[in-house]
Image (tube, helix red, strand yellow):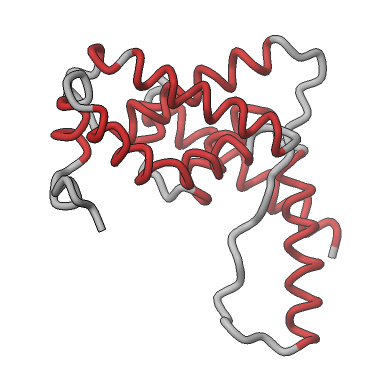
Length: 184
């Protein structure tokens, strides 16, 4: 599919080529558009805002390509830009309401109608409870469970210590467990 032979190159090599080769950026865009959009969408209340912020992130990544120094993963660098864009967007808003777009799907690829109804109801309840978490907890939950980031990657993106990330995740899980057990 890739006529430029970029499919075999890792993100960091491509990122270092972006300054001189727009096709390298196009390949990184192709690789990260969907996961980055899903992350941003999990942090903002509507699709239009998510689309705008995602576009801003990629524009910033392209215009700031010279600042990528390959000291960490390109993915962490890109999601750090997204984190900053979301923080800026939140600070410009008066309400801090963040909507989770989706909760990871159930494992069963072909559930029965009853199982699907129960799963949908549970997903809706979990999504509602995640929306009620403080913004920092929502963000680490989205990075950990929607994007599958490691604790270290989350720490780099959010510029928190690994310990602080673990504490945020622990508090979020504890609150969700408490809230969900109280609703059963």
